Length: 278
Image (cartoon, helix red, strand yellow):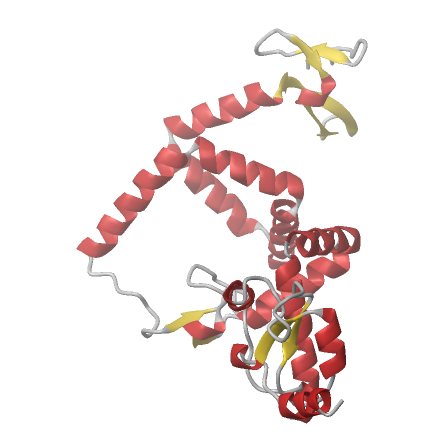
């Protein structure tokens, strides 16, 4: 057995490329023959290149060898390995690796998808689920497409919410930072959400979007719909929520702070009568 090459100033030579490299690019693992942790003789790029060469030379044999090894692994060990792999791919390092691999192999992936689609069409392959339904990859239940966040999503809304809650629990600081950043970037949407929350608490019907509010404000040229002089500060419910008003865009008007405070919870006819009787 060749003697281990000593590490000098955090560097050692690679046995394949013969370059002196930092120890970070060498694999550090337990050696079964000595029972000690040592650095590999070849650097990681050289080892990966050698593995890729062997794999390309005999891909069928390589796959058969690893399938046979995997078949000998116990179910408990398989579950542990899958969980560890999922956690790594969900980490920042794993996500960066997947993005890098995708862009490096973009053309080969497109070719693979075209070949796969052509083979499936030639064999008369049909989608296994009924039209308008999909199976959630998390809960493994067949559901309507309306129960998925988007057409490309493989996880239903319920499982997606559970994932989000789990991520927020595991990453509280990042969750708060991301939420604050979104609120700063979308002030109009935040106002809509606050009004929507108020309407839900009041049991009101209907809802509106940020685009509806933009069109409404543009219609009144950014001024108060009541006095027509002051710039608007709030979006006001013509029929108050506390008196059975809805949250539809037809029940909303831009109002300045003065008019909104004076009208308060009154109906429009009551407020006008109060103004005229003064």
